[in-house]
Amino acid sequence: MKKIAVFVSGGGSNFIAIHRQIIQGNILGKIVMVFSNNPNCGAIKFAEENSIPIFIINAARYPNAHTRDEFLLETCLKAEIDLICLAGFMKMLPQNIVKQYEYRILNIHPGLLPEFGGKGFYGTRVHEAVINTGKRESGATVHFVDEIYDHGPIILQKKVEVMETDTPESLAARVLKLEHELFPEVVKAFCENKIIMENNKPKILEYNEN
Ligand code: GRF
Image (cartoon, rainbow, N blue to C red; front, side, top):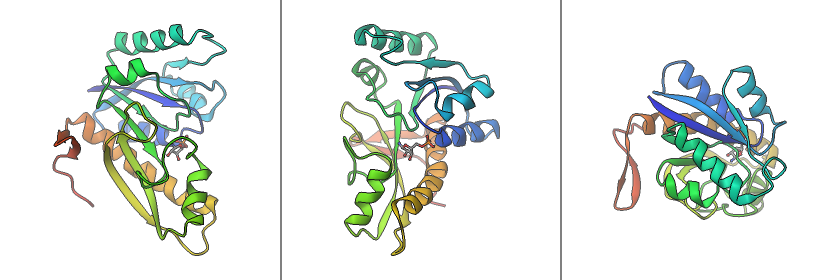
Protein backbone atom coordinates (compact mmCIF):
# COMPACT_ATOMS: atom_id res chain seq x y z
CA MET A 1 0.00 0.00 0.00
CA LYS A 2 1.63 3.25 -1.16
CA LYS A 3 1.60 6.25 1.12
CA ILE A 4 0.45 9.35 -0.73
CA ALA A 5 0.86 13.04 0.08
CA VAL A 6 -1.42 15.40 -1.83
CA PHE A 7 -0.63 19.08 -2.36
CA VAL A 8 -3.59 21.39 -2.96
CA SER A 9 -4.50 25.07 -3.15
CA GLY A 10 -8.07 25.15 -4.45
CA GLY A 11 -11.36 23.31 -4.53
CA GLY A 12 -9.71 19.92 -4.42
CA SER A 13 -11.92 18.09 -6.90
CA ASN A 14 -8.94 16.08 -8.20
CA PHE A 15 -7.91 15.20 -4.67
CA ILE A 16 -11.49 14.12 -3.94
CA ALA A 17 -11.55 12.01 -7.14
CA ILE A 18 -8.39 10.18 -6.06
CA HIS A 19 -9.70 9.78 -2.52
CA ARG A 20 -12.93 8.29 -3.86
CA GLN A 21 -11.09 5.67 -5.92
CA ILE A 22 -9.07 4.72 -2.85
CA ILE A 23 -12.19 4.35 -0.71
CA GLN A 24 -13.75 2.19 -3.44
CA GLY A 25 -10.68 -0.04 -3.33
CA ASN A 26 -9.52 0.72 -6.86
CA ILE A 27 -6.22 2.29 -5.84
CA LEU A 28 -3.77 0.44 -3.62
CA GLY A 29 -2.79 3.52 -1.68
CA LYS A 30 -3.65 5.77 1.20
CA ILE A 31 -3.62 9.56 1.39
CA VAL A 32 -1.71 10.07 4.61
CA MET A 33 -1.29 13.83 4.48
CA VAL A 34 -2.50 16.91 2.67
CA PHE A 35 -0.31 19.98 2.25
CA SER A 36 -1.61 23.39 1.30
CA ASN A 37 -0.49 26.98 1.16
CA ASN A 38 -4.12 28.02 1.62
CA PRO A 39 -5.79 27.08 4.93
CA ASN A 40 -9.19 28.23 3.67
CA CYS A 41 -9.49 26.24 0.46
CA GLY A 42 -12.15 23.63 -0.24
CA ALA A 43 -9.56 20.86 -0.39
CA ILE A 44 -8.50 21.53 3.19
CA LYS A 45 -12.11 21.49 4.32
CA PHE A 46 -12.55 18.08 2.68
CA ALA A 47 -9.38 16.75 4.31
CA GLU A 48 -10.63 17.94 7.69
CA GLU A 49 -14.02 16.34 7.21
CA ASN A 50 -12.32 13.09 6.26
CA SER A 51 -9.76 13.14 9.09
CA ILE A 52 -6.75 13.34 6.80
CA PRO A 53 -3.82 15.10 8.51
CA ILE A 54 -3.31 18.63 7.19
CA PHE A 55 -0.14 20.70 6.93
CA ILE A 56 -0.37 24.38 6.06
CA ILE A 57 2.88 25.48 4.51
CA ASN A 58 3.07 29.14 3.66
CA ALA A 59 5.12 32.25 4.32
CA ALA A 60 2.78 33.40 7.07
CA ARG A 61 3.42 30.23 9.10
CA TYR A 62 7.06 29.77 8.06
CA PRO A 63 8.58 33.13 7.16
CA ASN A 64 11.98 31.57 6.54
CA ALA A 65 11.90 29.78 3.18
CA HIS A 66 14.77 27.47 4.05
CA THR A 67 13.16 26.36 7.33
CA ARG A 68 9.88 25.88 5.47
CA ASP A 69 11.45 23.69 2.79
CA GLU A 70 13.36 21.65 5.35
CA PHE A 71 10.23 21.08 7.42
CA LEU A 72 8.36 19.93 4.34
CA LEU A 73 11.01 17.42 3.35
CA GLU A 74 11.45 16.12 6.89
CA THR A 75 7.70 15.68 7.26
CA CYS A 76 7.50 13.68 4.03
CA LEU A 77 10.52 11.57 4.92
CA LYS A 78 9.25 10.83 8.43
CA ALA A 79 5.89 9.75 7.03
CA GLU A 80 7.69 7.53 4.50
CA ILE A 81 5.78 9.06 1.61
CA ASP A 82 5.97 6.99 -1.60
CA LEU A 83 4.11 9.33 -3.91
CA ILE A 84 3.38 13.05 -4.06
CA CYS A 85 0.38 14.26 -6.05
CA LEU A 86 0.09 17.90 -7.01
CA ALA A 87 -3.64 18.37 -7.37
CA GLY A 88 -4.14 22.03 -8.15
CA PHE A 89 -1.15 23.18 -6.11
CA MET A 90 -0.42 26.77 -7.10
CA LYS A 91 3.08 27.06 -5.70
CA MET A 92 6.41 25.86 -6.97
CA LEU A 93 7.47 22.72 -5.11
CA PRO A 94 10.79 23.28 -3.27
CA GLN A 95 13.84 21.91 -5.05
CA ASN A 96 14.84 19.67 -2.14
CA ILE A 97 11.54 17.78 -2.51
CA VAL A 98 11.80 17.62 -6.31
CA LYS A 99 15.28 16.11 -6.01
CA GLN A 100 14.42 13.64 -3.27
CA TYR A 101 11.29 12.37 -5.00
CA GLU A 102 12.38 12.15 -8.62
CA TYR A 103 9.82 10.14 -10.64
CA ARG A 104 7.59 10.01 -7.58
CA ILE A 105 5.82 13.36 -7.98
CA LEU A 106 2.79 13.65 -10.25
CA ASN A 107 1.19 16.85 -11.48
CA ILE A 108 -2.04 17.34 -13.38
CA HIS A 109 -2.33 20.10 -15.93
CA PRO A 110 -5.59 21.18 -17.64
CA GLY A 111 -4.14 21.21 -21.14
CA LEU A 112 -2.23 19.10 -23.62
CA LEU A 113 1.40 19.69 -22.61
CA PRO A 114 3.91 20.66 -23.86
CA GLU A 115 1.56 23.27 -25.34
CA PHE A 116 -0.05 25.82 -23.04
CA GLY A 117 2.15 25.04 -20.06
CA GLY A 118 4.73 26.82 -17.96
CA LYS A 119 4.62 29.87 -15.76
CA GLY A 120 1.45 31.91 -16.23
CA PHE A 121 -0.48 29.03 -17.82
CA TYR A 122 -2.86 27.96 -15.11
CA GLY A 123 -6.61 27.72 -14.62
CA THR A 124 -8.75 29.72 -17.01
CA ARG A 125 -5.69 31.14 -18.76
CA VAL A 126 -4.95 27.75 -20.29
CA HIS A 127 -8.46 27.43 -21.69
CA GLU A 128 -8.51 31.02 -22.93
CA ALA A 129 -5.27 30.43 -24.81
CA VAL A 130 -6.57 27.20 -26.34
CA ILE A 131 -9.73 28.92 -27.58
CA ASN A 132 -7.92 32.07 -28.75
CA THR A 133 -5.48 30.09 -30.85
CA GLY A 134 -8.33 28.21 -32.51
CA LYS A 135 -7.35 24.73 -31.32
CA ARG A 136 -9.88 22.02 -32.12
CA GLU A 137 -8.62 19.80 -29.33
CA SER A 138 -7.65 20.21 -25.68
CA GLY A 139 -7.36 17.85 -22.74
CA ALA A 140 -5.46 17.06 -19.59
CA THR A 141 -1.97 15.83 -18.87
CA VAL A 142 -0.40 13.98 -15.95
CA HIS A 143 3.38 14.22 -15.83
CA PHE A 144 6.27 13.67 -13.48
CA VAL A 145 7.48 16.85 -11.87
CA ASP A 146 10.97 18.19 -12.44
CA GLU A 147 12.50 21.54 -11.51
CA ILE A 148 10.70 23.44 -14.31
CA TYR A 149 6.96 24.27 -14.30
CA ASP A 150 4.87 21.79 -16.36
CA HIS A 151 8.01 20.39 -17.93
CA GLY A 152 8.66 16.89 -16.55
CA PRO A 153 8.07 13.72 -18.59
CA ILE A 154 4.49 13.16 -19.68
CA ILE A 155 2.87 9.97 -18.41
CA LEU A 156 -0.65 10.11 -19.81
CA GLN A 157 -3.01 12.49 -21.61
CA LYS A 158 -6.70 12.47 -22.40
CA LYS A 159 -8.29 14.66 -25.05
CA VAL A 160 -11.54 16.54 -25.53
CA GLU A 161 -12.89 18.29 -28.58
CA VAL A 162 -13.06 22.08 -28.44
CA MET A 163 -16.49 23.22 -29.66
CA GLU A 164 -17.20 26.38 -31.67
CA THR A 165 -19.46 27.51 -28.85
CA ASP A 166 -16.98 26.86 -26.02
CA THR A 167 -16.14 29.56 -23.52
CA PRO A 168 -13.10 29.16 -21.26
CA GLU A 169 -15.55 28.15 -18.51
CA SER A 170 -17.38 25.48 -20.50
CA LEU A 171 -14.09 24.03 -21.76
CA ALA A 172 -12.65 24.08 -18.22
CA ALA A 173 -15.63 22.13 -16.94
CA ARG A 174 -15.25 19.43 -19.63
CA VAL A 175 -11.51 19.16 -19.08
CA LEU A 176 -11.94 18.97 -15.30
CA LYS A 177 -14.32 16.04 -15.71
CA LEU A 178 -11.64 14.31 -17.74
CA GLU A 179 -9.03 15.09 -15.09
CA HIS A 180 -11.09 13.19 -12.55
CA GLU A 181 -10.68 10.05 -14.66
CA LEU A 182 -7.10 10.65 -15.72
CA PHE A 183 -5.44 11.46 -12.41
CA PRO A 184 -6.81 8.47 -10.43
CA GLU A 185 -5.88 6.22 -13.35
CA VAL A 186 -2.24 7.31 -13.20
CA VAL A 187 -2.15 7.15 -9.39
CA LYS A 188 -3.54 3.62 -9.60
CA ALA A 189 -0.85 2.58 -12.08
CA PHE A 190 1.85 4.12 -9.89
CA CYS A 191 0.57 2.31 -6.80
CA GLU A 192 0.72 -0.98 -8.72
CA ASN A 193 4.32 -0.25 -9.78
CA LYS A 194 3.18 -0.14 -13.38
CA ILE A 195 4.88 3.09 -14.39
CA ILE A 196 8.38 2.45 -15.65
CA MET A 197 10.94 4.62 -17.39
CA GLU A 198 11.91 3.41 -20.84
CA ASN A 199 14.45 5.46 -22.84
CA ASN A 200 13.82 8.35 -20.43
CA LYS A 201 10.09 8.22 -21.11
CA PRO A 202 7.44 7.01 -18.67
CA LYS A 203 5.46 4.02 -19.81
CA ILE A 204 2.40 2.48 -18.17
CA LEU A 205 2.63 -1.29 -18.29
CA GLU A 206 -0.40 -3.23 -19.48
CA TYR A 207 -2.17 0.05 -20.24
CA ASN A 208 -5.53 -0.41 -21.86
CA GLU A 209 -6.86 2.75 -23.58
CA ASN A 210 -10.45 2.03 -22.64
C1 GRF B 1 -7.18 21.55 -12.19
O1 GRF B 1 -7.71 22.07 -13.35
C2 GRF B 1 -5.75 21.09 -12.41
O2 GRF B 1 -5.50 20.64 -13.69
C3 GRF B 1 -4.96 22.33 -12.13
O3 GRF B 1 -5.65 22.98 -11.10
C4 GRF B 1 -7.03 22.60 -11.10
C5 GRF B 1 -7.34 22.07 -9.74
O4 GRF B 1 -8.69 21.85 -9.53
N1 GRF B 1 -3.58 22.00 -11.88
P1 GRF B 1 -9.18 21.09 -8.21
O5 GRF B 1 -8.65 21.90 -7.02
O6 GRF B 1 -8.60 19.71 -8.23
O7 GRF B 1 -10.67 21.12 -8.29
